[in-house]
Image 1: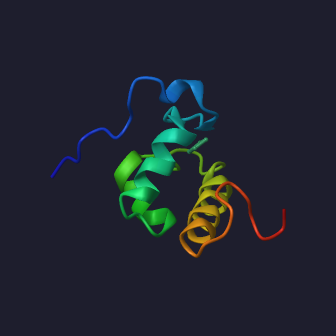
Image 2: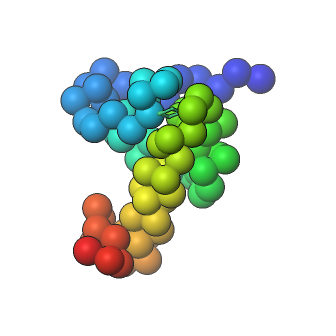
Length: 81
Ligand code: FES
């Protein structure tokens, strides 16, 4: 089964997270908002981190930020901020 491409026009204006597959932050945040709760889920949904793997840590950071905002924290901030 092939999932639809999550990227939208304008996503390229956000920070590029995955250089190998050219996935931007806005696309990853959309995947998290739509239910991805692990790096593996984001990989399957967006194909980010399916190349060299360098961006994997950035996916983990975005996941933590998403979890923080769902728990009532400040969106875009990590507990370390
Ligand atoms: S930068 Fe994402 S897999 Fe290489």
